[in-house]
Image 1 (tube, rainbow, N blue to C red):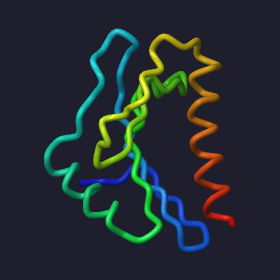
Image 2 (tube, rainbow, N blue to C red):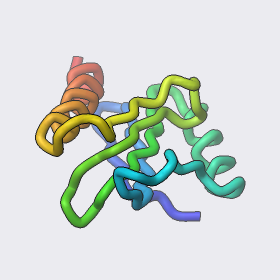
Image 3 (cartoon, helix red, strand yellow):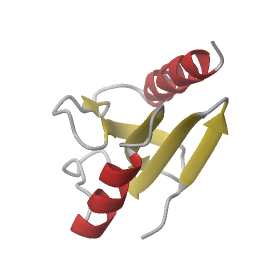
Image 4 (tube, one colour):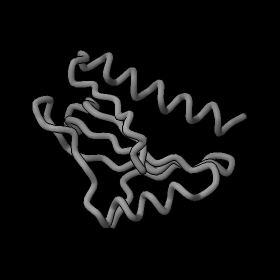
Length: 101
């Protein structure tokens, strides 16, 4: 299993798994092995794990969900590209603010 993004700031960890999807696709799920790895990582104090799915060539997220899932994924397929990017940026900025307190 691999981890697509790892960020460490002041003892806070952000782990991100990217999955490719198009606007018309169903929201992706992680394979069992990856889900196990991310579930274990999420147990680390001050760790946040996210699944970000979208058109990676255009850098447009269509779906964002915490791992393990809290059942509250954010479906961005109805947003225009710029607004979808802003939602992801807001989530990342909030993580950074918390990490730098």
